[in-house]
Length: 136
Image 1 (cartoon, rainbow, N blue to C red):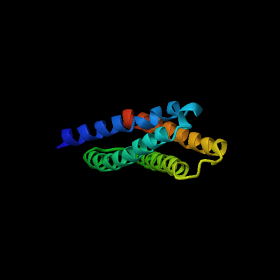
Image 2: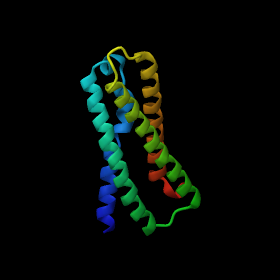
Image 3: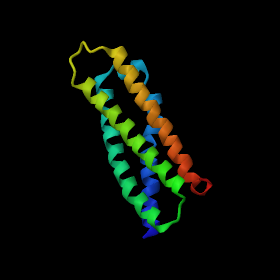
Image 4: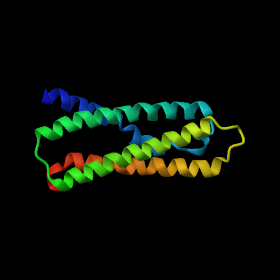
């Protein structure tokens, strides 16, 4: 059972790689097209569900191992941050997608980029925490 859960956990980590690539997708010429935004919204939506799979598989693996209290707290905070920043990214994409054509693009793109960059940074942080769990 451990190998199956580890497989799903690694598969979920690959799926969450979307957050690592997200800032590179946020070019101005790329984002002005609404069909592209629709694809980004659905990729984010799927990645949010992958985050739920990560919660269950990671919870199972956590109870099978022994980790320090500091590591647990750091993983929890980082995990919630990824969910929050990813969720806000999806919210702003959906808000723009359902808006009229004369939406203020410059203010919106700044919010989207900030949330995408923070999601990428927290994803990098969770990768470091997962690769070196016994260093904390």
